[in-house]
Image 1 (cartoon, rainbow, N blue to C red):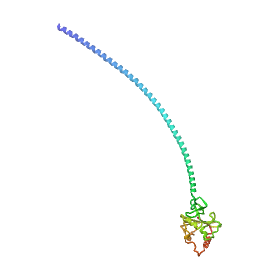
Image 2 (cartoon, rainbow, N blue to C red; image 1 turned 120 degrees about the vertical axis):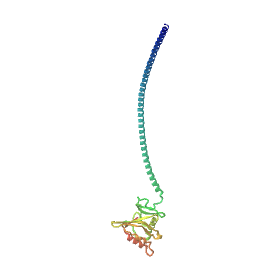
Image 3 (cartoon, rainbow, N blue to C red; image 1 turned 180 degrees about the horizontal axis):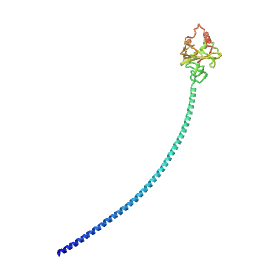
Image 4 (tube, rainbow, N blue to C red; image 1 turned 90 degrees about the vertical axis):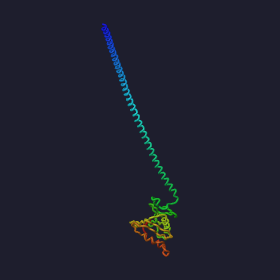
Length: 289
C-alpha cells in the first residue's frame, strides 16, 4: 500500500507537470502568431507608405519633366530669337560696311584720277624746255619746237610720234636752193620744208632712229610708195654729213643706197649744182620721217 500511494503521488505530479507543459506550449504558440501578425501588419503598413511615397515621387518627376520641357522650349525660343537678332545685326553691318566700302572705293578712284591729273600737270610744269623729239607725245600732230640733247631748239612737224625731216606736197616752197640753205634748213614745218642737215645730225646724234620715206606722184595724186630703213644716221659737217642706213624694205626702191658714198662736193663742183640735181630728181610729193 505504501508503494501504491507513492506511485499515485508520482503519477499525479507527472500529470500536473504534463499539463503545465502543454499549457506552456499553447501560450508560446499564441505569442509567435501574434508576432507574425504584427510583423505582417507592419510590413503592410510600410509597403503602403512606400507605395504612397513612390506615387508622390513619380508625380514629382512628371512635374519636373514638364517644367524642364517648358524651360527648354522657352530657352530654345529665346535662343532662336537671339540668333535671328544677331543675323539681322550682321546683315545690317554688312550692308552698311559694303555701302561705306563702295563709297570709299568711289572716293579713292576719284582721288586717283585727280592725282593722275595733278601728276600730268606737274610733269608738264616740270618740263622747262621743249621735247627732245616727237616720240614723247604720239597723239600730237602739227608743228612744234624740239631741242635734241646738247643742241639748239628748232621747229619740226610731228605726227604719230615721228619727226618729219622733209615735206613736199603742193610745190609752194622752192627746193632749188644752195648748199648752205640745205645745211641750215628752209621752209615752214606747217607746210613744205626741209629740216636742215645740221639740225638733222643733232637730232639723230642723241639716239638710234629708223627712216621711212613716202613718195606720191603728182599731179594728180595717183600712186604712193614707201621705203623703210632700219637704221638712219647722218654725221656732222666735219665728216661731210656722211649717210648711214640699215636694211631696206618697201615698194619705192632702194634709192638711198648709192647716196651713202656721197659727201659734201669738192670746191670744184658748185654746191648749187648738187642742190639743183637733188631738186630735179626728187620733184615729187615727199614726206620723210
